[in-house]
Image (cartoon, rainbow, N blue to C red; front, side, top):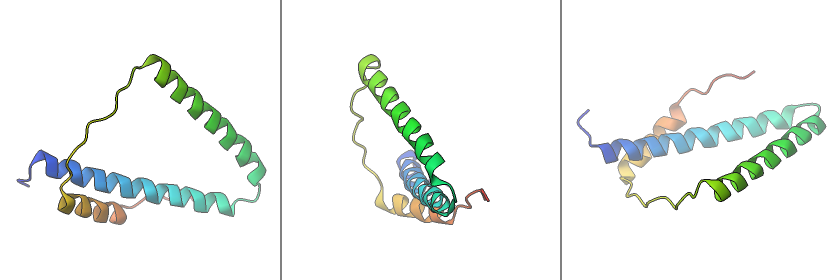
Amino acid sequence: DGRDKPWHEAFRIGAVQTIIARMKQARHTQLQTLDQPAALVRVQDGLAKRQDQVARYAKKNLNLKAGRNINVDPNAYARGKAAGADFALPDRG
């Protein structure tokens, strides 16, 4: 479509951030409607512990550096967010 790479990156960032937020909200809504939340608490605790283990491993072994700052085209970012809002999420019902 003739736009440069930074425009496409900004669009992608906007779209992905919106889709992730929508998926988290949908998951939260689904969890609120379940009849047996006690089992979910145990699973979520296990996932939180695993996430902590992965974070500690990465810090100790991967020597990750802070990411670089990027300049984001605000128009492309806004268009990406709008596209993310229109993106059809899979029906998990």
